[in-house]
Every structure is written in C-alpha cells, then in structure tokens.
Image 1 (cartoon, rainbow, N blue to C red):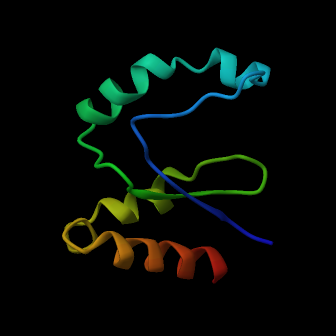
Image 2 (cartoon, rainbow, N blue to C red; image 1 turned 120 degrees about the horizontal axis):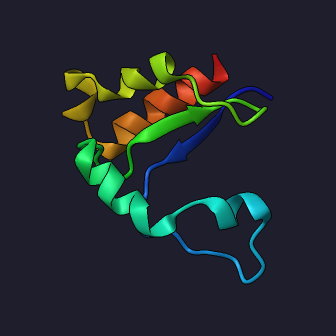
Length: 84
C-alpha cells in the first residue's frame, strides 16, 4: 500500500470523541487558510503512509492544466499517482 489520496474540504465533520491530534487542529481556521492560499474545494492531495505531506509532489495539483480539469480528471490523476 502506497500513498493515500485525500481532497481538500472546507467543512469537516468532527467525531464525537476526536483523537488528540484532531483536537489540536484549528478547524475554524481551515476555510480561511484554504481561501488565503487560493486552494479550491476538492483539490486532491497525496499523504504518505507515515502521515507526511510532500510539498513538491502536491504542488503538481496546482498546475494550470490540472486546475482547469474537471474534478473527476483531477481525482483520476491523483489515484494514478498514488498507485504508481
């Protein structure tokens, strides 16, 4: 098993009993941070099995040709990269 595909979301549901890491996450600031960084809703991102986030790899999804593509195309590209 390799990379995991996730998608940005401005509205996150929180579990009734969140884990400590989730408690430390400022959920109220996620929407404003995504807006400030001009990151669209449902943008794919790849997360390694150990939970790390590779900035260079994930910047790939911010390229103009992918930003202009449909959500389905973006998701297909992300899943293809994750399975590569």
